[in-house]
Length: 359
Ligand SMILES: Cc1cc2nc3c(=O)[nH]c(=O)nc-3n(C[C@H](O)[C@H](O)[C@H](O)COP(=O)(O)OP(=O)(O)OC[C@H]3O[C@@H](n4cnc5c(N)ncnc54)[C@H](O)[C@@H]3O)c2cc1C
Ligand SMILES: O=C(O)C(=O)CO
View 1 (cartoon, rainbow, N blue to C red):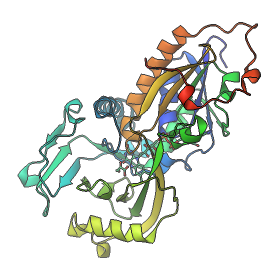
View 2: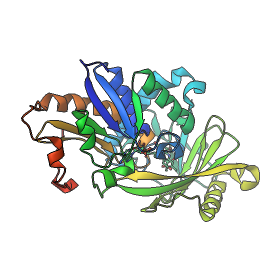
View 3: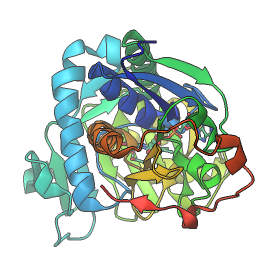
View 4: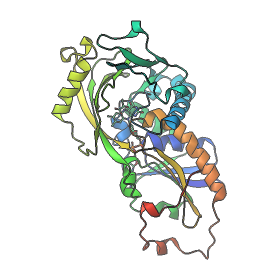
């Protein structure tokens, strides 16, 4: 531990916490430790498909910028390392509709390669759609393992431990990053974050294009080709905490993807497994500073990424660094005569009493 660097504790070892940790460590200004209840492969992040595509997350203008910054980071820092290392493959993506879409997605102005699909690209049964030429997909287990390796190679350390009281990590660090995903509901009492249950099916063959039928944002049909297999999805069941795969959902997903193209009819597929994850949904991704303990401690919130955690991860990590820098400058130095931290423990706090500082 280098005493000239500021100590930071990140709560959470999903794609959000790990990306933030890598960006902070790359500056050379911080000692970074992750505390997390669950480690890969037992995080929501490991249950994701995953492809780069803004989905089920707000606010769409910021999601647009964060998505483009993430795409730029992948192109510069990750894809050149090769698929064997990172499990990341570039794959064009088609978003398909059976009804006309007058409006372009609000995030699209931020993504130069975004365009409406041409007639000749359309699949049977669809009349409208969008495409991003330089999209990419991650085999999430392989990608998460690479993220952990990268974080540790930069000097980061990971403790598997649950944080029951948000004030605990502040005993050891003046700056804490809250990347707890759905856990923020309990950790800081944010009842605005809730689960959107997603079930996926892993099948044996890979394909050349990611195909997403989001005609109905709850009855999803998508095929996401990955390195060694493809992922079929999916479901979007809000406030559903069931982590067990459901036979009914599997059957309905297979019916929906068969409608995308006859090549995905179940007779042509070999099911390798099913996964369920609870997307950390929130009306808006929370990425902001909160000053604690009379301004002597800084809590940076980075959670609530819904269906786009991977898609915005590096953009949000870069903004986390900006927030840390801005917040650290404003921290009051703790002097010894201050009230000791444990005397605050009997003052229960609800999130509504937090003083949010939007930087
Ligand atoms: C089926 C499915 C498909 C998806 N597909 C895509 C996709 O194609 N593209 C995309 O961009 N996104 C996709 N997503 C969304 C993406 O998975 C999430 O947005 C992302 O995983 C959120 O990352 P996270 O790090 O915030 O959360 P998580 O991965 O849940 O990590 C949270 C971490 O915080 C820890 N934690 C929580 N509370 C505490 C506590 N009190 N003490 C200590 N540690 C704590 C947890 O243990 C964990 O380590 C998909 C999601 C699902 C379910
Ligand atoms: O199911 C999801 O959350 C997606 O982002 C599509 O892969």
